[in-house]
Length: 100
Image (cartoon, rainbow, N blue to C red; front, side, top):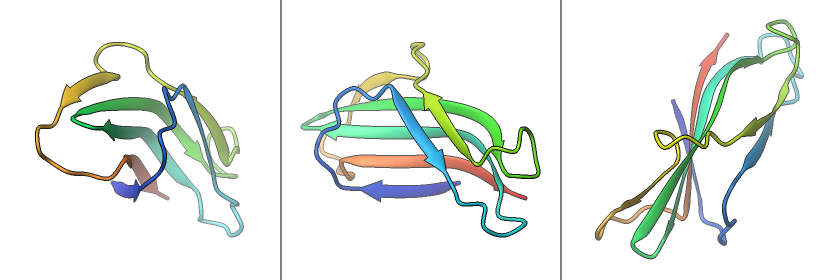
């Protein structure tokens, strides 16, 4: 699992994300399970899941190295929760990837 923390202004309610790579060399593809974005404003935080379950690879699956992912709207994948006094960056990206 790769984790990327980014401080940014509020992006509002996220509905879609676009993820890609250049596929410049053979073997640069990877499998993406999902992207989880946690966004915190004040004491309230929201977690949004963007399922993928596909390869980003010229030589696997459908050969695409770019995916537009839509937020999973069911209650188990998009939730609001309270974090008390814990502190984490404004936006946290959790990507579940598996290299070839």
